[in-house]
Length: 375
Image (tube, rainbow, N blue to C red; front, side, top):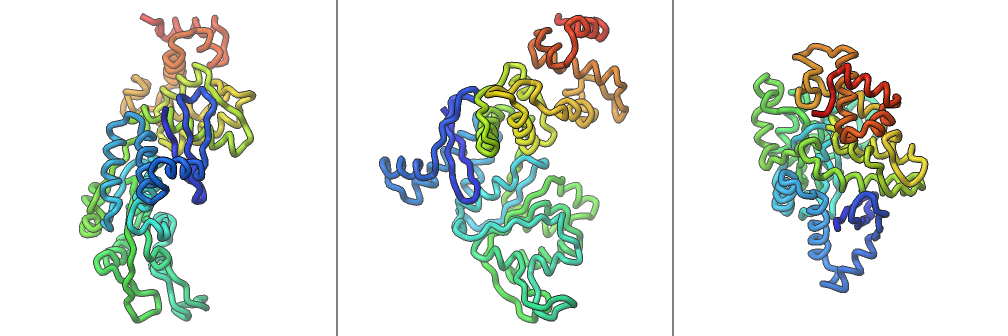
């Protein structure tokens, strides 16, 4: 039995399930509270302990993710600054929210800032606000995101995208924990916890002179690295269950199981887009499913295209289809795709041919042509 915690719009839902093939049983926040009241009383500590157990189960048997969760829970009650690294789509904001929710400022606002989306000329006014008359069009006082996060957490996503001038302004704020709105003369103190995230290698950016060392050390008091989904595939079944339930609810569907081939394809895929891509795949599959079973035909074609064309010269996944930066030929791509489907279907030629959309005789001819016989 495993648990999944779903947090949407402040509502907590807990999903209990033995595996992705069985219909999910849903508990609302009230059900969870009633259970806690019966056992230990519905106080804050019990709620936190329950969430910790749920999150621990969500990590499945991934040592890397359990280590990340353990560290996150240790640093959450402090006010220390945290830097979260990892590829795009690995769940950096999700972990930032976990830290916020379990911190002393968990009752305050969680304000997320996409540093890569703010033009350099607007960074200061967006972050620190401005006074009326500070510039043309400033017809009223406007508080900034820092002030909005007072008493809570300021989450700086994609911090590696900041320009050097913006980095200087952020560094000054982190050093002094005070800010001055654009057009104001007074410095104001602020009580806010800062969590930053990046999908870039900041060490390499520092070597190139594109990221300030002093800012890095201000941000990197505690560091969490989220491994890509391909390195923690044991967590996929739990995540799939979560997304199936979510999109069943959203679209009024009743998907309860996967065909063996679809399950094999989902397990074998490397997910260059990480958790975000997995969620997109499950959303696509739930929508396309005719009944209560997801088959290989319900999976998006991008799964195969991404694996063969976007993974680049990764010998582990492409097994020689690429050499250096050389682009694979069509025959090489076809060979690797057939090989992938054969592996996913355990060399069941009927299932493989069905997945590929070709006849068994055509598949057999391709197997002989590309020397893919099972030895």
